[in-house]
Amino acid sequence: MGKIWDKYKDHEEIELWREYRRSKNREVRDFLVEKYSPLVKYVAGKVAIGMPQNVEFDDLVSYGSFGLLDAIEKFDPDRDIKFKTYAMTRIRGAIFDELRSIDWIPRSIRQKAKQVEETIATLENKLGHTVDDEDIAKEMNLSLDELHTLLTKISGTSMISLNDIWYLGDDNDEVSFMETLESPQNLNPDTLIEKEEIKGVIVEAIKHLPDKEKKVIVLYYYEDLTLKEIGEVLEVTESRISQLHTKAIMRLRGKLMRMKNALKK
Image (cartoon, rainbow, N blue to C red; front, side):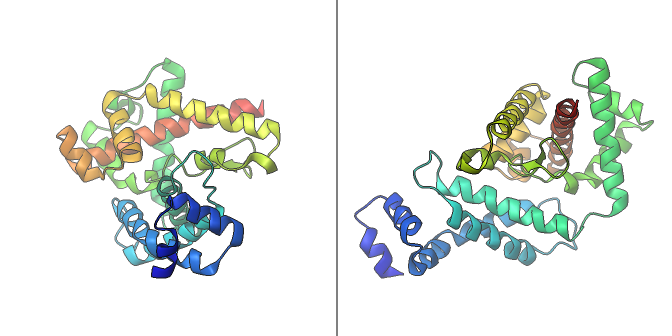
């Protein structure tokens, strides 16, 4: 690997990426895999927080490795994005793709998560404003403590990056934030417009989250802090941060679902 790095040590790393994009040199690829492999463990460690005990860390690393390879193959050094940012999204996406495929979430937990998500979406659509825990608990005939316990139980279902899969039109047509950064050559104009609309909806939805939920989303997804670190910043328990994250994601998914339904009309 030293020979590869010595060859490019006097140049920007972008030249190494351009070399690989042009030649697909295996030695260059192996060097890039070795250089960025720590990202896989880092992302796997973040994803592992909130996962049930039957989800093994080593398995997450294995799933994420496919995402790193995918990122290396598809990265365009001439686009305005750093490889680390691009790769972390691909790695996280690969991990969740595999978790979805092995159906790791018990059906009962999925049903409860769906019930909470639908309750939040229905209330906010009916009332026209962001609802708080008391509103949600009352609608579900739960006490506040029961609601918080439920949010903790279903937290694993919400550990999905905003850059991962969201709906676009039909059920089989999916989109991720990161796809908007890739080459649009294979996409028709209507699809591109819909992707930008989804991106706009999410950004606007984040702005209207309750203050603490907004901070959790920003610190977790954009500042790259762990839930424990966010708890220290906001001076609340890690469990409470997990609950806030779960509610925030459910609010965002509800807004996207309403957008999806509007597109079908």
